[in-house]
Length: 67
Image (cartoon, helix red, strand yellow):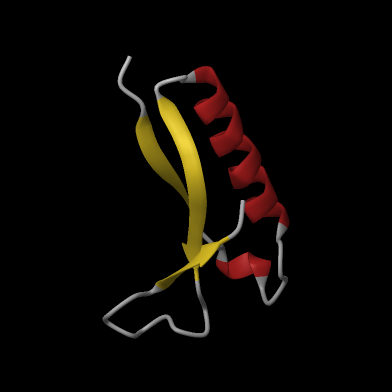
C-alpha cells in the first residue's frame, strides 16, 4: 500500500475572534484526525491554519502549526 504524507488545513471563522484555539479549530482538528485514522494510506505530517496576522500577504497566508 502506498502511503501519502498529508497535512491538515484548519480554517478560522470570523466568529473565532482572537482565540488561540477556537472551538471551530478544535472541531476541525478532531474531524481531520478521525478521517486520517480511517484512511491508513494517509499519514498526518502537520497542520496549517489561517494566520490572521499575515492574511493579505500574497506569499503565504497560512502558518504551520504543530501536531
